[in-house]
Image (tube, rainbow, N blue to C red):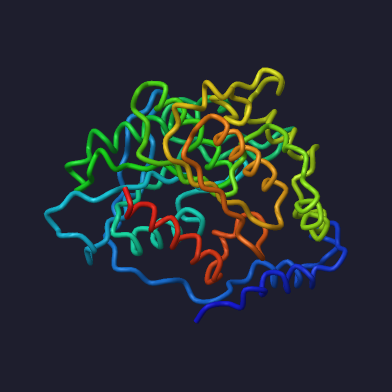
Length: 332
């Protein structure tokens, strides 16, 4: 059973004019975060793995369909996948990590490799990030990107072990993970080793969001303050990730600051934004930049949803997004 296309919009309306979750109340927050339906069930083999990286081992989770949509003897396409979480949060078990990997692998017959990249501590004395084996690091850019870059390299080197076609490995991610996928794709492309495609879902492409269009501004006006990515919130997140002033950001930190000449080497790119999301302006702006650079780009706005809809279990729009991701992998 699929959800009504307007179900998330209905939940959005029920939040009313609350500006914080404390103001909305625990019952409203619980209702907002409740699943929209049962989790999908796919026939998969799931393995834990580790890739060597410049700052220590990188945990990976490999999802391989056990009911093949391609002959067993044929190498499969693959997706290296990066969850989101403001560069500070998230793990392989969150729905955006685990459920998305399951859904894309099950739909496409592709292998999905989910990357547990290193995280930044919260800013201003907030909670420390989850620690990884090895030396204690002050995690800032470029450490998370280098983890993702190393993961892609490892998947290529180990492709035969996992039944993967090394020429059909895409790189994708959501939100902050979309930033890392985009920036690692740029690094790989500049090395002459671009992924077969980039799949970027509501990504953080710029340190500060571009100005909204009139149509975007109308949609954003519907959002309660606690769901907004205000300029101040974006600045705090971006400066925390960079560890230096935003003016020093490069295309390897936020690809949206790259020149057309830098971006021209990128592979086919799928960009999807959420209708009710300030980061929609960043995804749309980056899509425009890619077109100007001559990159093969597809841009879509997923209607009726807020930021992070792949974390919403049972949501019909999340299923539609995974359908499109799977179809792109099948085309590789």
